[in-house]
Each structure stands twice: as structure tokens, then as C-alpha cells.
Image (cartoon, rainbow, N blue to C red; front, side):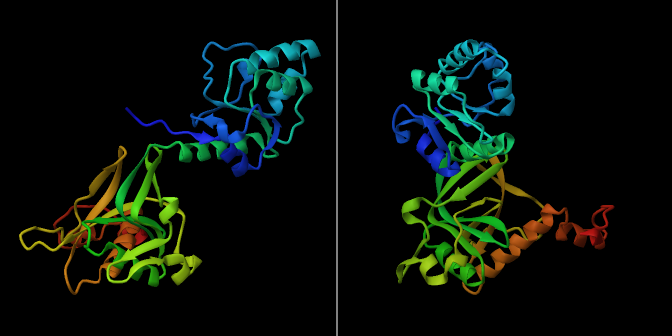
Length: 315
């Protein structure tokens, strides 16, 4: 059974600088468990047959103008009926003034009522993105997460293969550390995996023979980043003479992370190989492939071994 995550209303208030109009109890005791957001047009008209009470409700100018068509007594009845549907929170957007009948209904039913100055559509988009991140399915993987030339690179491999040492070299070459040792991965959308570090070990690196270092303190703020989308997974493994490694790059390989297929490559490690430089090249090569260019395909085409009618010079 999938784990259900939740976010406190207090965190939402702080993230969006919301003003509180009615609050039945401390916001850190109120939880949002759905990333969906609803504009209650039909509900204010009295239709509740398919109403999802788990959704945060956001009202804009259209809803307020619609409700102003009713008499004060009718508006009280409809607002009370709406708040009795028990949504986790109601937010009034665009800096609109809440009618007193709305505030009274919120207080009577014990439903949080808040307001924001942001445009309704903009706020809803921002709130959905925030909730998708906070409530996303997640797991933790052992590895190092870096941003290399703008690409999120998850470096994995057995303990002692040199992941952290490679990360230090990449940092010195101008790239940024996101997480070391424990990488928290979240499925933000159907095709997007975002990675970050647990708060208690953020910015720390473990180097055998030296110990724990703080990358932000040693290398500066430019050497770290709080989160990044995972674009490429790199598996580091000790060189095995009995194993055949990919020398052309013709086949694409993927690793399943929370149901998302993430491109992956395997890099063999042995003395004399500069892994940091190889990973830089891997990041740039991945960017080229995203643009539709594959060096192996072009080489085989030049050798007359592939019939591909493509003008690579356009990339």
C-alpha cells in the first residue's frame, strides 16, 4: 500500500505569505493530504454530488461576483452549506475582501479561511506545484546527486567505489552538489523525478581518510544547490575484465525510479581514469542526445553502416 504524505497548513501559510481570516486551531495541527485544488463554482450554486472534500478550495473574483447576486440571507445559507462540506482550507485570492457572511460561515464550521494578494490562476498553479512536491511519492537511494552543466546527475555505485571523491572533483570544476550518501527522490509528475538531500545531512560530504566536510563552508554557496531534477543516472563500478562495456553508445538504457524511466549509463572505474571528466562528457553527450544528435549514429552513417537521412549539422 502506497504511503500517504501530508503537509501542514502552517507550511503553506509561510510559503505563500497568506493572511489568516479564520483559524479554528494552530495551523501546524491542520493537514493537507491532496495535491488537487478546486475552484468551487458549482458548489456555491448548491451542487455537491461529486465534491472532493480533500481538496483545498480557492475562490477568485468570479466566485465573489456570483455570490454578490444573492441577497445577504441567501449568501449566508450558501456559504454555510459550502463550508459544511468540510474542505481542509479555503483561500480567497487576488486580495479580495471576504464578505462577512463568508467569514462567519468559516468560524461557525471551524474551516480555515485565508487570503492572498496573488492572481487566482497564478496562485493555483503555484499551490499545485508546491503540493505536488510536498505530497509526492518518494524514496531514498544511496548515492551522490550533482548538477553537472545544468543536468541532474545521480551517481550510484557500491560503497568505496569513489562517488564522494568524484563529487569533490566535480565541485572544484564548477559544478554543484545537491546530496551525498542519502538522496531523497520524489516523483513530481508522471515523467519528472526531483532529488534533494535530507535536511540533517544537507551540504555534508564523507571522504574516507579525511572524514566529514561541509561543502558549502569549504567551497562556497556556488558549490551547492537545494534540489534538481534527475536527468541521468550514472552507475560506477570497479572495472571487470570479464565484462563487455558499451563502447559505441548505440543502445539507450534506463533505470526505473518510482515508475519513471530515467536514462542511465555504467562507467567502469580503474586507476588512471579521470571519472570527473568522464562524467562531464557524459552530461554534455546527454544534452546532445536530447537535441536529437547521436555521435555513434553519425559515425556509422559516415562509414556507410547506417542509412539515416539526417542532417546532423543542424544541431
